[in-house]
Image (cartoon, rainbow, N blue to C red; front, side):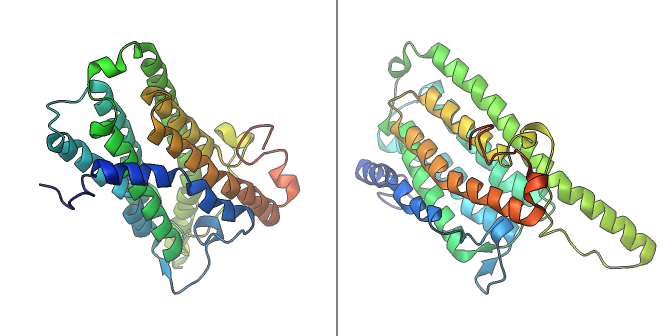
Amino acid sequence: MALIPGILPPSRATWELVTTCFKFFPLVTAAQWITAWYPSGKTSYDSPLNLPGKWAWTVMESPTILIMAYTMYALPTELHISSLPWANWTMAGLYILHYIYRAWLSALLLNPSMSPIHLFVAAGAFTFNTCNALSIGGWLAGYGPTTVHDWAGRLYTIEIGLVLWGWSFMGNIFHDDDLREIRRSALRRQREQAEKEGKPIEGVEKLYMIPKNGLFRYILFPHYLCEWFEWAAFWMIGGLGCTPARTFLVNEVSTMLPRAIQGRQWYVEKFGAERVGNRKAVIPGLL
């Protein structure tokens, strides 16, 4: 039984509408090139519309997991598809694995703290993730390839894509953890000092430093770059005809590139051009 008739799981008309409209998302993100207003993370500020960072992040990222899983479960039955090819399930698994890490493990368990997230940002991210999960989930669950013959001749491309995806995912985790360690180490020092001097722990919600490990030696947002490689590999696995995967990659770059460039300027203003040095924003030696 459909949770929301025509939407969960998506009918073909709903899927085509979402997939088509989602291609134009870069027109929305273009606003970031003319304003630095982004009340989340480093650039968050006090506001009555702020939400607790960890829980806001989990809620706005969770549709990716829940919608994808439900669509893969329910849509084939509605379309009278007895079974889906292993490649469909593999792509769905990669997608869900990435967001289990981002939405649940990273936010709730691994991050020592997260800056508040403005309601506007959280609502926008929730909408983005809902549309993306419907688009990719619909393609994988019945509106894209549905037999092994649809994947014929693509084994080596899929294998290369899987290897690239795996390394990129690990790179994403590595650089995320380097950022987390800044706050973890500061929190450990605060706790030691609190035990010695009897002072309260100040907290590390707005603590920032310049990381130096891995690709942080060359760029300030290597976790962005690794994520782009992840979804480029995901598109490679799906093939050139996987429009939802291509759209996702384009939308990610259009969303994150201006934030990375503005983020580098934030680092320069906070720490000085000398300390930032020759580090670029997101592409070593270029941008």
